[in-house]
Image (cartoon, rainbow, N blue to C red; front, side):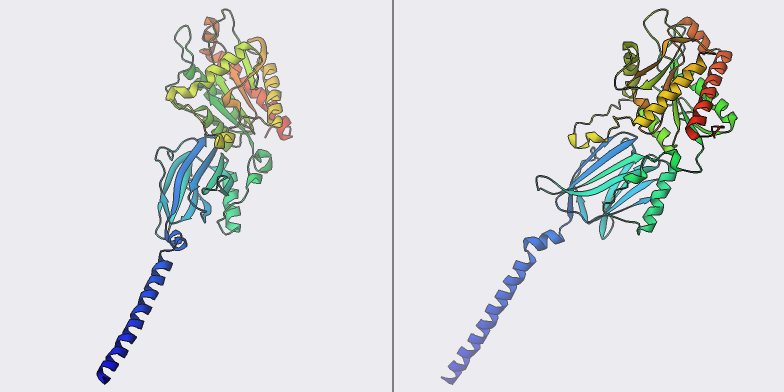
Length: 419
């Protein structure tokens, strides 16, 4: 009986220990596979990537399954925006992440303990805003990044500010750094960007005797550049110096990145109305000054289609990145220069009737760069075509534009030299 009693007690203690072990195991399993624990350990999910805009302004939106804890900073050589993330599973379409506009390259992936997104700019840029936002429908979060073309000086200032704020942030509005323009730079010289219209696969208009517009505009722009550079008071750049295709928004980007005080776009179109000849100076307007100006703007604005690069922004969330409004001050400066230019050209070359006109040219829509488009003449007119090929005529026209720039620069910079 004693043996039996001892045996019963042993089984009782073993049973208690077994039951305790089972309870502990169940508790461990419950805590180990609790939803909160699984969510904490699981990678962050990047579920969608959207990017829209052009070479002057872009918006990037990245959707996540939960709130991302991020840090971001800028790097030079090349100009890059780096966004550091927790370990992230990128379930996004390669097509959606294809570089376009101001963004030259998009890279993302695992970095050991975390993940990283790198956006390489097509030259210097400003981060206007970078926000982490909760989706309205409550399904997750998103990062919204607004970028715009800027100058090297502005990018360097952003890097300097970044160094002062430990080089990383989550969401800081940097709008105050954007669009400050040349006036805010004490060492800035009056800067002119000359834009030879068309180029590459986009030849532009063709004259009665076979003259191609892209060749005329490049030859004239080169001569104008040399005359302006010879003055010694300006920094002068060209959007293209060879026979290459450039999108219209890339032309605007180049002007903005050089902090241009003036953009002069050079063209030589054709027109179906017989007998019309002479030079015309255009500024931008939401409404064209006349049907001929509207038709010309429509033709020039189709240039991007030559390379199959039509921008389609169907997502309402990103439509506000396009530059549609021209700042009043910039528009006034454009009108002022156009008036001065018409006056100078009238003394040296022939002008059409009502030579100062306006239309919705995309290449003139930089919000902070006074811009004009100069139609040197019409290749559809034999006399104009001959003049455009004549070195003496080109020299007179280029000198007239140079004189107009000197007057405009003196007034805009508030000096008597234009420098």
